[in-house]
Length: 149
Image (cartoon, rainbow, N blue to C red; front, side):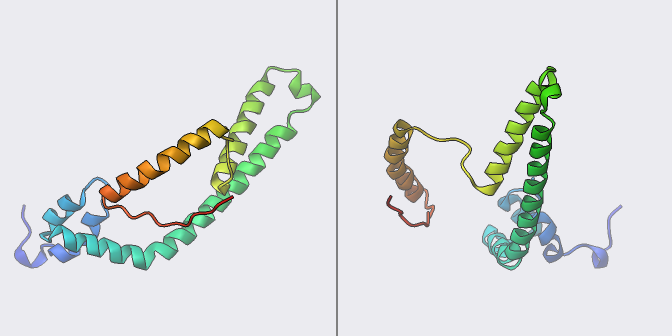
Protein backbone atom coordinates (compact mmCIF):
# COMPACT_ATOMS: atom_id res chain seq x y z
CA UNK A 1 0.00 0.00 0.00
CA UNK A 2 1.37 3.37 -0.99
CA UNK A 3 0.75 6.64 0.71
CA UNK A 4 -1.18 9.32 -1.17
CA UNK A 5 1.03 12.27 -2.18
CA UNK A 6 -0.27 14.52 0.61
CA UNK A 7 0.98 12.15 3.39
CA UNK A 8 4.35 11.23 1.92
CA UNK A 9 7.32 12.27 4.01
CA UNK A 10 9.27 15.09 2.39
CA UNK A 11 13.03 14.78 1.88
CA UNK A 12 13.57 17.55 4.42
CA UNK A 13 11.63 15.61 7.06
CA UNK A 14 13.57 12.41 6.28
CA UNK A 15 16.96 14.10 6.55
CA UNK A 16 17.42 14.03 10.37
CA UNK A 17 16.64 10.32 10.52
CA UNK A 18 18.77 9.47 7.50
CA UNK A 19 21.87 11.43 8.52
CA UNK A 20 21.88 10.15 12.09
CA UNK A 21 21.50 6.49 11.08
CA UNK A 22 24.81 4.88 12.17
CA UNK A 23 24.51 2.29 9.38
CA UNK A 24 24.33 4.81 6.54
CA UNK A 25 27.13 6.77 4.97
CA UNK A 26 26.73 10.44 4.17
CA UNK A 27 26.44 9.53 0.49
CA UNK A 28 23.65 7.03 1.21
CA UNK A 29 21.76 9.51 3.39
CA UNK A 30 22.13 12.22 0.74
CA UNK A 31 20.83 9.91 -1.97
CA UNK A 32 17.86 8.83 0.17
CA UNK A 33 16.88 12.45 0.86
CA UNK A 34 17.66 13.78 -2.60
CA UNK A 35 20.28 16.25 -1.39
CA UNK A 36 23.89 16.65 -2.43
CA UNK A 37 26.39 15.15 0.09
CA UNK A 38 27.73 18.65 0.83
CA UNK A 39 24.29 19.68 2.12
CA UNK A 40 24.20 16.66 4.43
CA UNK A 41 27.73 17.42 5.70
CA UNK A 42 26.71 21.04 6.40
CA UNK A 43 23.58 19.83 8.19
CA UNK A 44 25.68 17.51 10.37
CA UNK A 45 28.11 20.33 11.08
CA UNK A 46 25.24 22.51 12.27
CA UNK A 47 23.82 19.72 14.43
CA UNK A 48 27.21 19.18 16.02
CA UNK A 49 27.72 22.90 16.64
CA UNK A 50 24.31 23.19 18.23
CA UNK A 51 24.24 20.03 20.34
CA UNK A 52 27.92 19.27 21.06
CA UNK A 53 27.92 21.15 24.41
CA UNK A 54 24.90 19.13 25.55
CA UNK A 55 26.51 15.89 24.37
CA UNK A 56 29.77 16.75 26.15
CA UNK A 57 27.93 17.54 29.40
CA UNK A 58 25.94 14.30 29.33
CA UNK A 59 29.08 12.33 28.47
CA UNK A 60 31.00 13.98 31.33
CA UNK A 61 28.25 13.09 33.81
CA UNK A 62 28.20 9.48 32.59
CA UNK A 63 31.99 9.19 32.75
CA UNK A 64 32.11 10.72 36.24
CA UNK A 65 29.42 8.32 37.48
CA UNK A 66 31.27 5.38 35.93
CA UNK A 67 34.56 6.48 37.52
CA UNK A 68 32.90 6.72 40.95
CA UNK A 69 31.31 3.29 40.52
CA UNK A 70 34.58 1.68 39.40
CA UNK A 71 36.48 3.30 42.25
CA UNK A 72 33.86 2.04 44.72
CA UNK A 73 33.96 -1.51 43.31
CA UNK A 74 37.75 -1.57 43.32
CA UNK A 75 37.80 -0.44 46.96
CA UNK A 76 35.22 -3.09 47.88
CA UNK A 77 37.26 -5.79 46.16
CA UNK A 78 40.43 -4.68 47.91
CA UNK A 79 38.63 -4.36 51.28
CA UNK A 80 37.33 -7.90 50.85
CA UNK A 81 40.91 -9.20 50.61
CA UNK A 82 41.36 -9.90 54.29
CA UNK A 83 43.35 -12.79 55.77
CA UNK A 84 40.45 -15.20 55.38
CA UNK A 85 39.83 -14.25 51.73
CA UNK A 86 43.53 -14.47 50.93
CA UNK A 87 43.60 -18.04 52.23
CA UNK A 88 41.08 -19.07 49.57
CA UNK A 89 41.57 -19.34 45.82
CA UNK A 90 39.11 -16.51 45.16
CA UNK A 91 41.67 -13.86 46.08
CA UNK A 92 43.30 -14.27 42.65
CA UNK A 93 40.03 -13.36 41.02
CA UNK A 94 39.61 -10.39 43.36
CA UNK A 95 43.12 -9.15 42.57
CA UNK A 96 42.51 -9.40 38.85
CA UNK A 97 39.15 -7.65 39.19
CA UNK A 98 40.64 -4.85 41.30
CA UNK A 99 43.49 -4.40 38.80
CA UNK A 100 41.12 -4.18 35.86
CA UNK A 101 38.83 -1.72 37.66
CA UNK A 102 41.73 0.50 38.72
CA UNK A 103 43.14 0.40 35.19
CA UNK A 104 39.79 1.39 33.66
CA UNK A 105 39.28 4.11 36.25
CA UNK A 106 42.69 5.60 35.40
CA UNK A 107 41.87 5.40 31.71
CA UNK A 108 38.61 7.30 32.18
CA UNK A 109 40.39 9.93 34.29
CA UNK A 110 42.98 10.42 31.54
CA UNK A 111 45.77 9.08 33.72
CA UNK A 112 48.45 6.77 32.34
CA UNK A 113 47.78 3.05 32.53
CA UNK A 114 51.31 2.08 31.58
CA UNK A 115 54.77 3.58 31.57
CA UNK A 116 56.70 3.44 28.30
CA UNK A 117 60.43 2.89 28.09
CA UNK A 118 62.98 5.32 26.70
CA UNK A 119 63.31 3.19 23.56
CA UNK A 120 59.57 3.40 22.95
CA UNK A 121 59.68 7.16 23.39
CA UNK A 122 62.43 7.37 20.76
CA UNK A 123 60.25 5.37 18.35
CA UNK A 124 57.34 7.74 18.98
CA UNK A 125 59.61 10.73 18.39
CA UNK A 126 60.62 9.22 15.03
CA UNK A 127 57.03 8.41 14.05
CA UNK A 128 55.51 11.81 14.79
CA UNK A 129 56.90 13.62 11.70
CA UNK A 130 55.69 10.73 9.52
CA UNK A 131 52.25 10.92 11.12
CA UNK A 132 52.06 14.68 10.50
CA UNK A 133 53.11 14.27 6.84
CA UNK A 134 50.47 11.56 6.30
CA UNK A 135 47.79 13.71 7.95
CA UNK A 136 48.73 16.63 5.70
CA UNK A 137 48.64 14.35 2.63
CA UNK A 138 45.10 13.27 3.57
CA UNK A 139 43.99 16.84 4.24
CA UNK A 140 43.60 16.28 7.98
CA UNK A 141 44.38 19.22 10.25
CA UNK A 142 45.98 18.42 13.58
CA UNK A 143 45.86 21.22 16.10
CA UNK A 144 47.95 21.40 19.24
CA UNK A 145 50.93 22.94 20.87
CA UNK A 146 54.44 21.69 21.39
CA UNK A 147 55.42 21.31 25.01
CA UNK A 148 59.12 20.91 25.64
CA UNK A 149 60.25 19.23 28.90
